[in-house]
Structure formats: structure tokens, C-alpha cells
Image (cartoon, rainbow, N blue to C red; front, side, top):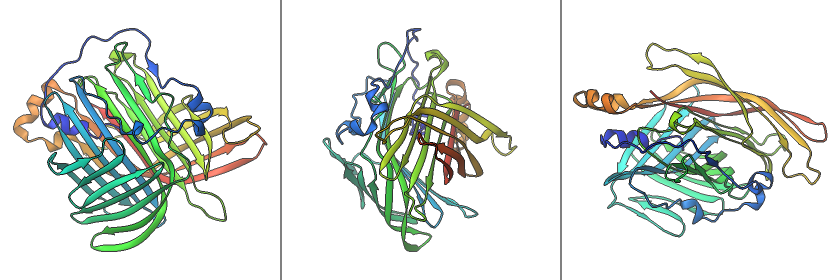
Length: 384
């Protein structure tokens, strides 16, 4: 949920400025119980729909699924709806990648007349496509040009939300981010059709939901994210290390909003917003408009979750990107006659997606230490 709908809003050239910022303290994901006892915070499917009324500014809502399959194919599916004043619409983005292969990218707007949604549960249909489910178990069925899938995401732990799920950046609560994780770690099985070939697939996955409400001229930047998965080998359970880290616009602080999750099998180990973070190994490519980081390092020390004795758990390591598989600059999608106009009124979002791996360790209260070597993807979004 890292600003995937912002590009669509800028393409429509809607121009509206935000109000004055306040120096008052923001409220970020309040509710300590959800962090200390994540298994106790089980949001309902209706809560996770994020059906907030738009107060008139820019708003985007996203439904995001990602999977790293056993044949080392990475899949990202993002269905979103953005609105800005009287403008808005649905969109779908699908990106697949594998090491050494050519990525597949599908991006298309969906007509409001074509899409149907339920107001009390996750059920979205458009054409021959259907996304539905509840309680951590979800089905994603897509029939697109050159791509198709029937994927079942089977949650290993219940859905989760950080605190009350709101990160308010202004005292009026008009500028905020919502975040929920219906599937922190999921077993993924089903069928994938790519390049005319259909095959059965298995792997590990993750799903989140997000909503951003903010003036379009004051979007969060930069945003860092990675999700890295471990395969179930030698009887060990699957696991995920997931990081999402926003930095708000300077008008609101700036405020840093990090969320790091580590789930192992059917138990939580870490859910923390106290994350030491460093972005490094910056790459300057003359063919790309801005530099990007290859290395995202994290360190977390906190109370062990999912163990009766509690105690301290430590996780540290770094996601290192091996290659950029998708690069998106909104300026490249705007007709040349409009670029100068957009450049006057807007900064533009630039998104880097990288295949890579997470190397690190996790230390448990009983003194045992486990080496982590996980595969997945990272993402860096910057407003330039």
C-alpha cells in the first residue's frame, strides 16, 4: 500500500492544495494491546474494508496481495480505488518477476459500471475476475490479457491491525493513513497462467489493506517496504519478515511510521513500531531519474510474542536487492504536451521494485539463535 494509486490521480491533473499544517502531536496507531498481544486484535472483515467517507481531498484505498512461489516467481496484485473531488476510479496492477526473467506488468483502469463490491465483506467482482474471502483466507481469481490465476491465500495467523489502525497526521484527523493486515502470513496454492502456460503453484504470501487521505501536494515520501519469505524445508515452518516504513510530508513533522512483523508458522514472534532502520548502498543509474537504495537494514529488540514465558527477542538483518524488476515514473506516462503543466503543480511519484533476499538472525529468550535467509521483494517510493 505504498502510494500505488497516486499515479492515477496525477494523470487526471486534478489541482487542489491542502490546508495549513499544525504543530500538534500526531496520533500513530494507538492501542498498545495490538502490539503486545497481536493475536488478541482480530479485526472483522468489515473493519478491514476501510469504507471511510472522503471529505473532499485526495483518497486512495488499496487491496494488496503478494506471493513468493516455490518456483521463485514473485507475484504482486494490487486493486485500488482513488478519488479526488469529483474525480476518481478503480484500477488494477499486476506485476510478476523471476530472477533472470522478463517481468510481466499489467495496469488498467476498471469502469465503475463494471465493478461490484459488497459493503459488509470482502467481495469484489469485475468481468470474469473475483477477489473474495474473510478471516485470513482469500481467493484471487483473475482472467486478464496474457495473465490468469486462481490463488488461495490460507492465513497462518488471524488478521491483524496495528492499534486502532489509524495514523493521524493532523489534529483535525483529516490527514491520515489506515493500515490492516488480513493475512500476515499465508500458504498460497493454486494455478498461474503466464506467457500462455498454466501450471500448479505453491508458495508463501501476504496481504494488506491501506487507505491514504491527504492533500495531493503533501503525500508521504519516501516510503520503504519489503516482504521476505522462508520456505518450509526440513520440517521448519514458513515465515515472513515484513517492513513498511512511511515518512510523512515535512508539513506534518515529518513523522516516521514504521511497522515490522515477523511471523513463524502459526505464531507471532514480533509486531513492532520500534524499529532501527537504515537505507544504504544507494545506486545512481543514468537511465533512471533518481537514486535508489539496494540495502534496507533493520533491528528490533522487544518482547517475544507467542511464548508463555515472554522475554526478549532480537531480530536484525538487511534486505538486499539483487535487481530492479519494475520501475515506474509517472512523467513517462503523461503525454508530452501536459508534462510542463504537471511539473509546475506536482511532484511526481517514482517507484522502484527489487527482487532480493533478507539475511539476518533472530534470537529467542531461551538463548537460541536462528539464521534467516528469506527471499522476496523490496519497494522504494519517493516523491521527486
